[in-house]
Amino acid sequence: MTLLDDISLDNITPARLWSELDPPTRVLAAEALFEGDPALRGLAHQAIAAALRFRVAGVRKLSVGKRIDYLARVVRPEHELACSLLMALHLGRRQALLRSFLDHLEIPNEDGLIDADHELGPVDAEALAPAVAGLRERFEGAQVDLYLASLLALDPDVWGGLAPLLQAGPD
Image (tube, rainbow, N blue to C red; front, side):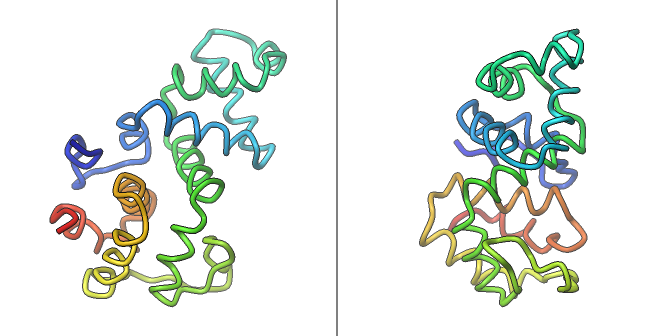
């Protein structure tokens, strides 16, 4: 059973995808978020405070480990925070996977982060198929599925061509 067995790709959102993640993956994402941009930490603090019915100042006094645990286990993130968590996971913990995929598609990137001046338009399934196959050969299947599902959830206009490839499975 995989992540993709439990989620409909037709109307996938970052928040729905987050809700299907296993606890260890959520912890990795929360750790990566807390290591990154301070503004994102602030967003996480607000979500934790709301979930626990604490004041934000009280959340900030908790150890980072506790904040990570609450973010991973208790918070049901809204769209913006779910997007940030998924991006933090991949950019902070799975850069080799991102870099490999983008390099195969000849999309300019810096350690998996698409160059800001690159105009990215819709990528069709025909171009995506060999890149997806390459990922499946090099990386663990669950990580590949999550990354591809994340792309689809974060930007369906650009990555919509992934849907039929994900629905077909890792054949």
